[in-house]
Length: 126
Image 1 (cartoon, rainbow, N blue to C red):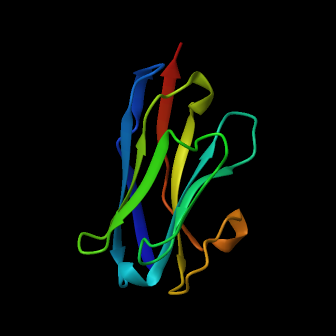
Image 2 (cartoon, rainbow, N blue to C red; image 1 turned 135 degrees about the horizontal axis):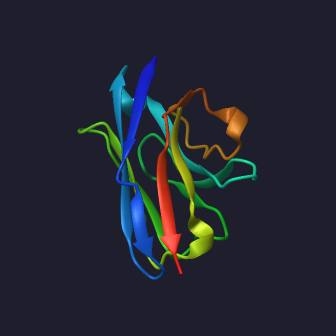
C-alpha cells in the first residue's frame, strides 16, 4: 500500500504559476504509475496528467497541454505538477493518485487508480 500527501496549492492570479507536489510513503514508489486529477465544484473528477513508473511516458488533458508538466523523482518518492499560465477554469481540488504498475501504459481513467491523496485546493482569480 502507498500513502499520498499533496502540497503546494493556494490562491494565484490568472497567468500565474503553481507547483503541486505529492509525497508518497509505504511501498516502493517506483512501482507505481502516478497521476493528477482535479475536481471543481459540481463537476466530475477529471484527469489532468499521468506518468508511467519510470517517467518515460506522460499524458495530458487537452485543456492543460502546453501549460502543465508532470514529472517524478523516484529517489525522493515524489510526483509533481508544474502549472503555468493558470486560468480561472483551473480552479479545483487537485488529487494525486497511484496505481501499482511497471508497464509502459499510461492510465487515464479514474477507476484505474487505487490510491488517492486528500487533495489540495487551487484557486485562480481573474
